[in-house]
Length: 264
Image (cartoon, rainbow, N blue to C red):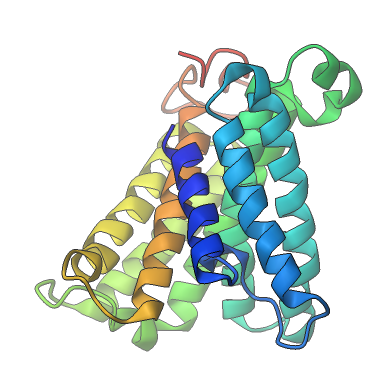
């Protein structure tokens, strides 16, 4: 599984660097036991990623990771929003963690059986998938808003060989928003989720791929590449959860089977 391998890689990266992996930011300087927390983050990512490879431990690993990411999203991403609620970048950062939450929740909703279903029925099956997809849709809206709020800054990331950089930023911003609204509303949700995952993947490939391939010495570029890759993996998990749904389904129609979508 790409998502599991990504988590293991992120965990190893955090252990090697002895610092927070890119997806585990932002933690303010001076935070109590900051180095210990960084180590715990790396271990959680590596351990849960490894656990997802085995059927017996996959549900437990997904649940542990989901709880960890939810706490992280509320404590650290939530803090940033609290300090700057009107800044689009605050919500964009929240959206990055939200995509990982959505991907993990999708896995847990599908993998949970037996005790997990009895104890955490509200978070698994179709209910769990609905929550995961809603979180994903809201994250896409946050991404789109950030694109439109920071056109100049985002345009600088567009590959030089593409014309009309600002136009591409606005186009992708509105497509993120449209996709997010469609996913939340359940209107052509499979198509919207899939196209959004493709867009995130293309962003990873076209923007950060060349820098990584060239062996860039810029640590920030590698950090952004890791984040973008993780987002791509999480987005595809959510998109895959619609495998049994119609591409053009509307609310009230069958939106996909929690038990069959990711297990095929």
